[in-house]
Each structure stands twice: as C-alpha cells, then as structure tokens.
Length: 110
Length: 274
Image (tube, rainbow over all chains, first blue to last red; front, side, top):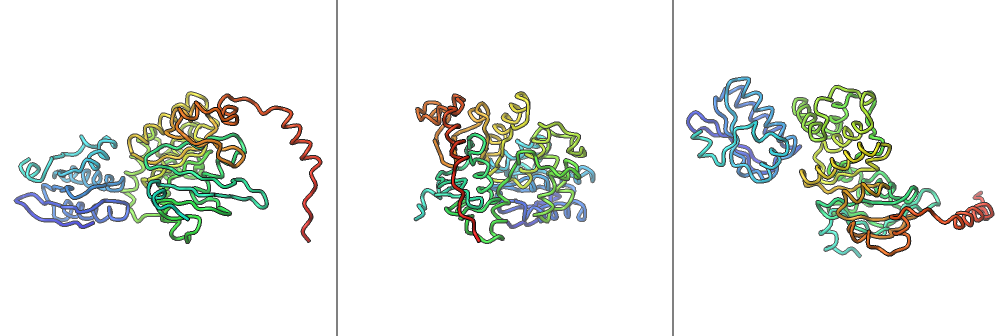
C-alpha cells in the first residue's frame, strides 16, 4: 500500500494505492488525521480509486477521520470507491454517513 | 501425492486425516474440502468426532496423520509462527461462547485485535462497535458476559470471532443449549453474515433443522468416518442406511447396544506396559 498527499486549490487530496488492512490502516489513519489536525486542511478528499479491498480497521480509520473533520469544522470526502469498498461501507451502514463521489473531479467541484 | 488443482479450488482441503487421543483413534482417514464462500455444515451425533474435526481444522488439535491444507498451506506440518499467521484468517466461535468473564463484552471483542495488531485504541473501539452492531448487540459493549443471555453470549462470541475480519469463520455447536427461537436467531445471523461479508463458514452441529437451514453442503460424520457429503437436497435423498437413520432420528437398535455392552464387559485387556 502506498499513500500520498497533494494539494488542489483549497482541497488536500489523500491518494491511497493498494488494499487497506489491519497492518497498514494505521498509516492511512495517521495521514488523514495529520492533514486534518496539523495542517488544518479545510477539505480533505480521500481518493480510494486504487483501493480494491478495505477491511474493518480501514473503515474504522475513515470513521475516526470523519469524526475529527466534523469536530474541526472541515470536510472529509471519499471518492473513487471500488465496488468492494462501497459494499463494505454499505454493509456497515456507513455509506450515507460519508460524503461520497464517483471520482476526484466530482469531489473537487463539490 | 497432493492434487494441486483440488487444493487451489478449495480454501480448506482435508486429505486422509487421522486424529488419535492416546491409543484411541477418533478420526479414521477423513477426506473432504471446503469451498470458498460456502457454508459447510459438519453434522454428526454425540461422539462422532465432528468437534474434534473442527478443532483440528483450526489447529487446536494435532493430527496423527494426513494433511490439512488451509489457503494453500499444510497446517499439519507448518511451524508455529506460520500457524499463527493462518489463525489470523480463521475466526472460531466456541460452543459455550468462551468469553472471558472478567472482561466486558467490548474488551472480549477487542482482545484479538490487542493481541495481534498494532492498532490504536481509538480504532479498536470503533471496530468493536462495528462488530457488535453486525451481530445485533449494539450498545452492549460495557456489559459483563454474566449479564447476557445465552443467545447474546453466542452473538458476542461471534463478534469476537469476526474481530480480525477472518476469511473463514468456524462455529462449534452454535445453537447448543439455546431455546428454539434463540437458536433460529443464531442460524439467521450465520446466513446473514455469510451473505453480507462473503466469508467461508464451517459449522459443526447435531441440530438437523439448523443444518438444513444454513448449509450449502453437508458432511455427515459417524464414528470417525464420513458417511455422506453433499448438498442438503442430496443428503435428504440419500438411501444410505446410516444417513437415513440419522436424518430420520431412528435410535440405534437395542440389540447392537447389548452386543457392544457384552463385548465391552468381556473384552480382553491390552497387555500392561512395564
């Protein structure tokens, strides 16, 4: 799994490449919480287009980042969900809790 | 000789498995496989060897001979460290729940995550709540096991077995000791979890109604041997006398028991070892 961040206007894009599981989800959590808490990014877009599988710890990391973003008055947006990742969020009844867009362009214009 | 195709096709492949307790052989050369994403029910009467089989599949018993291929590795012959890695992919819900009485329900579910991962407490807490929600126990995190009913304990045990997102979830007698309505609730939970999370599920039970409700395929074990393998429909249609006896709940003829009893009383003792 590889994770990178870049800036697009006022949006901070966190791009994850590879599966998110018990072993690497702490890194995803750390990067997301870092841009939210330390960089105080007002709008964070997690681009998960290259994530085929996300386990419960990955979902939990996204949930925690969402909570932090709400506490700080910023936005956490998910985009590019694979069918499997979308299904995991649906099964956990979380798909409506997040702002979800099809792709990065739509997320940027939201 | 191992047939690669067979092993690749199955998430678990069992080849000529034998298990002994001392001098007594409990499983006498078992062969079957578990296919990915199916619910396989191991059915059998008391003392048939079905629980021993499940315990051997998850590495809690050591086979005396044979092979058990789990995700392409023969767990009968791998080092302990590798077995630990395989175990992380296996969730086990024990017959009595086996919850730690001194820990809350939430702490019980969190235990495998604390033992096997480096996840932060905050992440573990969210996973615990997700898992309890999935088994219908949302809000019971702070309860002690002693405060739960039998059915709730089983659900909590399922949540703990699912904590690590296992690929294979095993149940030992999930409805034992529960009234029929609560037992049906556990059956429905198993069906729901399999459908929702696309897990492979292995269930050991002697409950016929439960087995026919949840199984994609069934293995019927009798006295340490496989009597039948097939879909519920295939087992229902079986003409095999022992299969019929089990499915039709016909008691053993008394004469057999008398003969066994007579043999037991008059059997010669094995020579004592000096």
